Amino acid sequence: MFFTGHSGGWLMEQRRNLLKGLLGAAAWSAMGAPAIAQAPFRSTRIVVETRGSGADLILIPGLASTSAVWGRITARLAERRRLHLVSVRGFGDLPAGDNADGAVMRALAGEVGRYIAETGLAAPAVIGHSMGGQVALRLAADAPSRVGRLMTVDASPFFPALISPGATVGDVEPIAQVAYQAIQFLGDEGLRARGRSLGLELGGAADAVFGSMGWQGGDRRVLAQSLYEVMTVDLRHRLAEITAPVTVVYGWSPDAASPRSRTDSLFRGAYASLPRPARFERIEGAEHMVMIDQPTRFLAAVDRFMA
Image 1: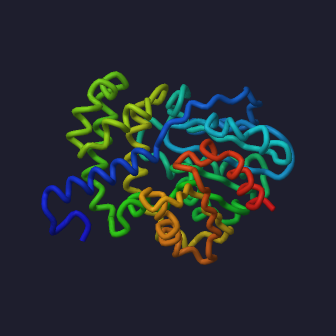
Image 2: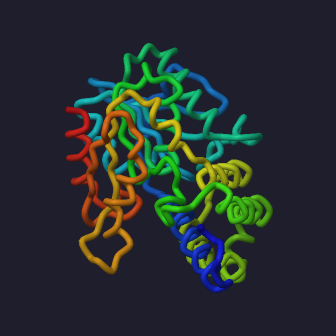
């Protein structure tokens, strides 16, 4: 069993690897994007902006990211499509709104579904990155008729399984609680100042993580709760309810020494319960931020997805 029947050193190493993978997957991107028009929709949880014309495509960013994460590819995507760029309130400079209290991801999926219904979109395509991929999966399971096709980008229905395939929610819960409290109570300066000591307390992962993520402009309550959910939400049992075709995009490396060399089997295992087998698209040379690491290859994958 995961985290059981082993020495304290092994346990610490597993916790270190789990935190590094999960927290690293939440990397903040500061890519800028030009101003775009506000869609005729109001929400206390999300902001949606539109650009372009053509087939409807909804883009949902990940933890601590706004729609600016798509900045390098937005213009190209909008050449033949009407983009609906979602940002989560409480990430970036957006006020937290109702995301400041209680669970986040279930409500976000509901709001994206409401946006689809109130703006009259007919089964649009949906792309979600990281945490946004989990929101998209929940949306497709909750309201199958509202999603025409779905792409997840370096996202899993249960993120810990990408680090240790045998992990359970119970295994991850204590680590998620520590991460939640660290973000909630330390504050931005505290996170930067205590990165090294916090890294030791959490098994060595947080030192590099908090330094690279920055946590700039986000509401700590929303960040903490969202990270907790990313670490503990298991949607694998919901995959059977998804009727839309699913494409799974992820970073990959041919280097056997890289953890990315093993992503093929990990992602295929994660989506095995889909009633319709997913299409898997590995992007060589990309890490977690696939659309930033390899924008040309990612755009080609989107073209195939939308064809």
